[in-house]
Length: 440
Image (cartoon, rainbow, N blue to C red):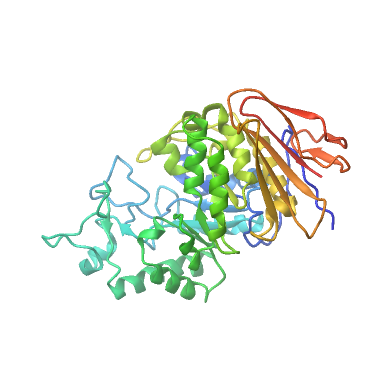
């Protein structure tokens, strides 16, 4: 079967057919993070549901909703509080709608071929969680005076640390997770600070949860060991390298060094790559603040890596504001100027076997060109000899001219313009922080 590869420069809307059965998440999938409170003026599940056709046409496969539970009142930060201070693990935040509203969102996501996962905060709860109302103080880590306490080493004074030495708490935590799978048919969980929760808990949780249905599990953690229980982990180190290169604090060669370490991850491990998420946007700055003009090439780079790209809501509208974390601060959707950019990248990710394959099923070659200012990334496979997808990424603020290692006998396509050509031995010009992507 022929697999086509492309460059990245196209304008125009890219539409995807709506499947009725969500695909199994792979490196070909695209995940989209939804901050329900800020997603719309109403801040409801119903408004997210209205956006599903748009997200589907952009190529989104998995919806990740930030915590949907009621938020604690005790020690609350701001007027609305943190989503990660959970008051009731089996409840729905009334700001967002009802349980039936949430079920409707899940059902419609499935109808449009998407999976939906929810954020799960297993490390801590709010200090007025219903478990404490029920007298389960021993389910928490206590200070020297016998009171619940925040997670040590943090400034999270609006939460109470959970005690994983308590088997009854573990049992109820798993029961709470299972409730959402059974009652609402969700497809998995993004697990907050997963590395701070014992691995044996996650292994037991996954075993019990998958008696209901197969799930997709994302760990907010970097370590390869997390893949014992999780399908996907964060590419935090890679994200920070991109930030540093954009700020002139690191050389592009650090990307090659990072790539060489990737071998430590198991074959079926999926890594998540991103230029923004809720933490980065609210606490460390927008893409514009952290990456400036380099944000586009860094997004392309994240799609070139062997993993799953993340889009944070608002990136498709050039969100240039740190969204408030404890107050209402809705996204302005008037300017949807990045939809085509992401739709083009998502289409490439979906159609190209070389970008979709599990690690070690396709291969990649990283080359430094132009005194280390340009990286060329070539993805190829022995299964389909001669087929390649090539990314040229100018990781500098100066124009660059490169002569690409493209096969002059092959028919190449520029992904973003759709222009096709055969002779590939001519030099290519790259704008400052520019990019070209070709497939044959």
